[in-house]
Length: 208
Image (cartoon, rainbow, N blue to C red):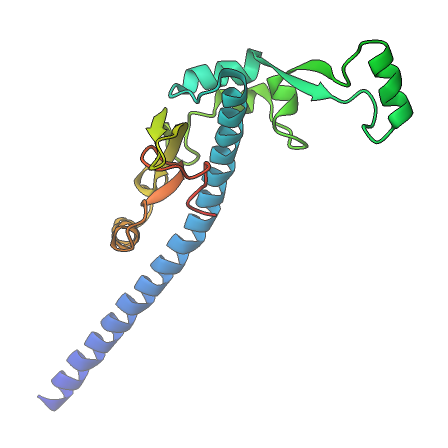
């Protein structure tokens, strides 16, 4: 009987060790994949934010439509002001004034070629703006409108978000549940989000 108990106890210890090891491995794998996937989602949602800011510069509002935003980036133009001479150059400024000219030149450029700075964003990249990376076809949730602040100022706002459940769903279900619950406990959005429909955030992202 004593030997039987020892054998049973040994098997229980081995099983428990396996469960603990498997849990640690599962958590480590999940967290590594979360970092990789979240970076990809953040990178794309930053481009969406850049496009929305450019759209607002042209139209004085944000758009709730991803198709409209994509078309704007692919086919739209945007005007920039360029100074003809340095305003510290009094002689050059006097010459412009003499000729009745303003010290500014309007340059019209294609949106896609300018708003992303040194980052290379192709038309193919723009066409995929609506798709959440690792989301298996899931699309970003986006909205836009106006908000009246406490000082009675009406400001345009937008938000764009990707829930964890859309780009982490193929991994450990329990780890995903734990992640979502922890974010909700801290009163944070369980996913990646930029902007807000209910408060003016200056288009801040919840990863910043």
